[in-house]
Image 1 (tube, one colour):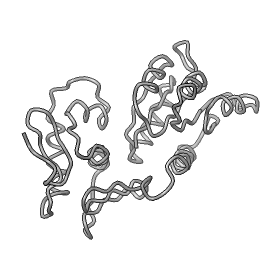
Image 2 (image 1 turned 60 degrees about the vertical axis):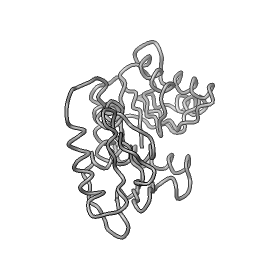
Image 3 (image 1 turned 45 degrees about the vertical axis):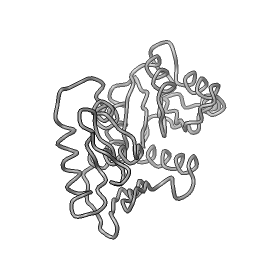
Length: 231
């Protein structure tokens, strides 16, 4: 699940982002309203968590209102130190799906996120990704191939989720760095190749068909072998 966090209080942003990443979410963070508006409107997200008051001449409510005006229905939770009834009502009527007052416990934020995601995508497909006999359970944070359970580290889980969400598509190293590691620049690192190798050993070793394929000079593709061609 991809989550955008728009929060200009550094400690609060770190608190939210760290908790979400530990819970298995792919998180991108912005520290002002202008950047938040750009990311919210130019990329696809499963959930957006944003502060009511933001620097950058655009507040959280304006961002949500802009999304709704454009027909974007991505669930959004507004978090704010403004706790009176009028502010909460304005946030919900302005397009927010939930309103959480600061300070808050991360466990409550996570529970509200999970509830919104269930409402936004009801049914079996909202909690599981399936490719061939590989099943990734988003809610239980479990992976299995056939009847064999596969233990993954949090980063491996996020990497596999991204590949499965893009089944059959070529994903570049830059795409993976941005989506899984939240790097927005070329680091000239082999971290992706190392993680892919580890993931292959767990997902493909001893199983057929092979699912993770290298597209030489470009990136990777996850697909059953009969639909994937390494080039």
